[in-house]
Image 1: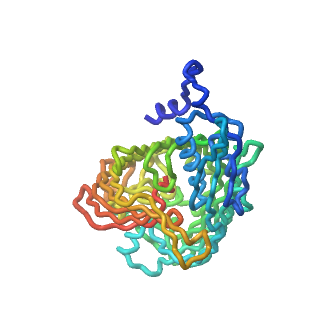
Image 2: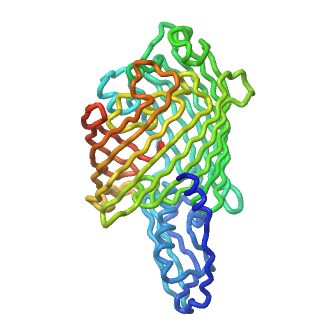
Image 3: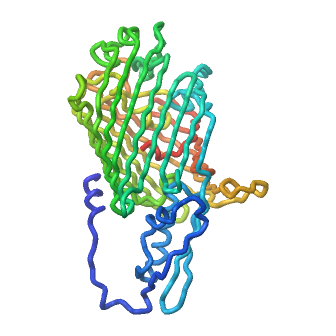
Length: 466
């Protein structure tokens, strides 16, 4: 299915309609007038429009072209609101007006968070020592060119220091991008292994339990609007205490207390969804190929990994939507250190399986969902807030029915980990509230194949992790 969708993305029809064209059916775009961009350079906005001054467009194609351009601009995540309108000048000449409401771009935010894999795991353990605190700086639309600058200082349960910079619009056509960054973290407790389908925590007497350093550089090519190619080069350096290596000799592999390696990744992405925050229509195809271990260091576990992701969203009837998200991963190496053998329960998980993790070299996960739009996307102006970046909020509400399925392949499982090498599934329903600055608040009730059930909570942008 992924291969077919990949090919369809590159097929275009070339049908001559010259004999069917009537002069009055064609509009000529005289100019594009932009307002509201106090910080953002016009070139960033013009890059996302699927038309330019001097172009011609059929009248019947004008509204879809305006809508698609609006979606492209909103998907940059640097505007709260975007409005496109048309001014008719006569003689089939038009001006397109683009009005944007910019977001607040500089976020010096204090960090106070739980350090568990998800909120429900934290509620189950109620371990208040697993709290992180610190400061986080995120500068969106840096210099008005849609660049991203981030810095982080995190203390508490997990200590982390990070800095990253992304420039997505290099070159005359703004279709080249680069990014670079590093992170260093230290923790006194690690998930030493998986037992009874749950991560087993271990705090050694010789602290810290683990330190990790990661540095990366990447290049991205985005030819037009929806297709991108990326090449990324990562370096990882792990160190663990002697006690960690003694308790689980496979934590870093072969009883090692240190491990360093390089990763080279190529990723293809084709995305024509109407929204990256909470899509309702369109689809996305992602393909990733990774080589772990490049022979530069003495890394003993080189492997080649392939990952494919397909997201499909469809409107069925008014206010009723369907989506399916499927992700599959395959690795050539079946015997890996514990830190490289993680599958589900970390970034992706089945609903109603929040307390559990499933380790393995290969896996597939597929989610099916019916959405009922209870409250259509709307906006509200808060009268006592004067700053336009904050005084107008958008909101929408959806009721969901879902079914999730997954399979994790593990050639050498711990006998207590019974969830691998067999199909897992769950079902349930819930509510999603989409609001302020792309936040999605979810509450849902779910039951898994073992009859375990309950209410679960999530505050996130759901599709970011995919």
